[in-house]
Image (cartoon, rainbow, N blue to C red; front, top):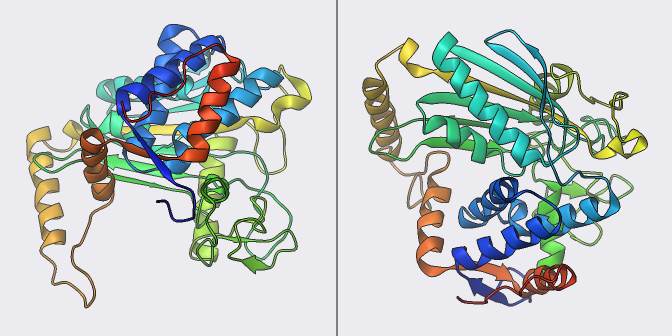
Length: 359
């Protein structure tokens, strides 16, 4: 069972991947782009980041059908100065632009030591760890920033200026898994509230969100995705401001309440975002193997810390998700039955087969 009363359906990774790819192709995505988007969603489900997994398919389905999201992603280079590049993805799928931008940042970091790539006219990237891990696997320390529509008030306010403004970093390791950190600078992403409703959860944790009046609530039905709370209060807000600068302002994209006036889709650009990727080539500082061994030592020092009362293990960032991915590859991915029904309903409308439950 899930946290609420909604039963779970266990499905295998290949079956979920096949359904998502098929639906995305039916929506008009080229095969290679459909594979990237599906991989991003499946990897989130495997790692237990359920808010950014297959449950996002309904969002993308609706936006493509309504004309707010272009099924074919076209990436244009606006400016290229070697270690810095500005791209425009014309409101195509964020995952396609994100992979291209992160890969370019890594490529240029290997040439220049450090590189930054920004993207304007971007849409939802999904889980940012997907991109920073991609860079860590190629010997880089990586950072990712993304802003979005003005739905979150500043600390102490009630009028939306920011999005959840997620931030991620990843660091290559040796024998240990890569260190990877991926958070919304709000206490929780709005998708977690939507997923809690879908699961039928009775409550959400305190500190996640307010209701429409700005009053804190633990009721997922009363909680407003336009009244999310910053984690750590003013500290989370300060990090959220940094994300806004590194993604929206630096990318010459939307920021705060300023819409991107260059949008080819006019008023539809309310879904537009900006992002920034930064990659640092470790070998400019230390031989990669030596750096990896030092990261391993740091991880083991953390694990060796004397446990506080009530704690049975200390985890470094990303470790729980690495373990959960291995478990779900072995045992299957648990999805809320309501989500499976939603996916199958969309699949039927696209003449695609239903999810092979448990296969």
